[in-house]
Amino acid sequence: MSIETLTESILSKMAGIGKWQRDFFVQLVLTWLSLRGGYTFENLARQSPLSAVSYRKWFSKGFDFRAFNHLLLTEYTQKEHLLAFDPSFIRKSGKHTCGLGYFWSGCAQAVKRGLQIAGIALVDVVNHTAFHYHATQTVLPAGQTLLAYYARLLTSQATQLPGLSRYVAVDAYFAKFSFINPLTQAGFHVITRLRNDAVLFYPCLGPKRAGRGRQRKYAGKVNATQPDPSCFRLCIQEQDWQAYQANLYCKSLKCLLKVVLLHTYHPDGRLRSSKLFASTDTSISGTDLWYYYHLRFQIEFLYRDAKQLLGLKHCQSRQDNRLNFQFNFSLSLISLAKIVHYLSVPLTHRGAFSLPDIKTQYANEHLLQRFFQAFGLCAHTAKKNPAYQQLLNYARIAASLLMILS
Image (cartoon, rainbow, N blue to C red):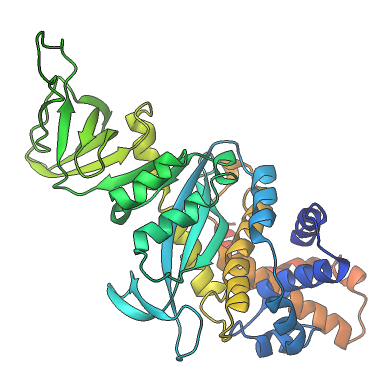
C-alpha cells in the first residue's frame, strides 16, 4: 500500500473533507516527504505544483488531526496501547507570535524564549514504537499553573482517549498531585517515576486493633536502600540490577500506588543507586509497569525526527492556526510513514525505523519524475528498467549496507 492510498482512505472516512482539501492533503504528504531545504511556504511552492498562496490558505483552514490520527491508529496498529504525554520546546524568534514565552528546553537544559507544544502520542506496545495523536501549542491562561494546564489538556479528551488506552506515561516532572489527581478522577491510570526522596509508607495490612480510637493506617516509612522483604517482591532480576514491586502509600500524591523499586549494583555487589517507578493502577504487574514506563521514551523519537527531518521548527508564520497545522502535520506524517514503510515489514525481518532513508527515497522519486517530464520519457516504461530501482535507492543507508553485505 502506498502512502497516497493510505492517506486517501483515511480522509474518505472523515466528515466534512471536500475533494479539493483531500487532493491538497495528499499532494502535501508527497511534497513534504520529498522536500529539500527548509519547510517554508516559498520553498514548498518551488518544489511542487502549488503556489505559496495556496499553502498559506490551506494552512489557515482548520483540519481535525485528532479524528485523522484516531482513525489511522485504531485501524493499523495493534490493540495493546499506551498513551505518552510530553511537552517539547520549539525555537521561535520575533515578538508577535501567538504563544511566545519562556519554556524549558531539554536540549539546552535551560529556560529559553520560544514556543512549546504539548504532544500526545500513542505507543504500540507490540511493535515498540510511538505514533502521533495530537499536539497543542502551550498558551497558558492567566492564573493557571503549567501542570494544571497539562492536566486539563488530557482530561478534556477523556471521552476519546480511554478508547485507545487508559494508561498515560509521563516523566518524573509530572509526579505531582496537581497533575495526577485530575487524571485519576477522569479515569486514567498514570505511570511515572517518583523522586528518589519521595515519602512512601507501607500500608497496614495486619489485623485491626480492638477498642476505641482511630485504626493504624501505616506500618512504617519506606527506606529505598533497605526495603522490607516482607512487603517488596522480586519482579525482575538481571546481572547488575534487580527490581522489586509493592503497593505503597505516597504522601505527596495522597493515594496508594504500585511501586517498582530498582536497585543497581557495583561489580562487587555494593548498592550503586535506587530509583522508584509508580503507577496509580495497583493491579498492574511490576514487569508491565517497568516496561510501559520505558516505552514512554518513544515520544522523544517522534520529536527528534520531526525537528531534524520534517520541519517541525521551520514554520515562519505567526498565526496560531498555521502553526498548529504545521506542528500536527509534521508529526502525523511520521505515523503515515511508519505504517507504510515499517509496520508493513514482518516483525522478524524488521530493522530500525529510518526516516532519513524514507525521505531519500521520496526525494529521488520526485527528481526522477521531473526528469521524465523534462525529457519527454514514458514513466511507465522507464520504471520497468532495473536501473530505476537503483536510482530510487541512491544514497539510502539501508540500500548501501545491503549492497556492501551482498
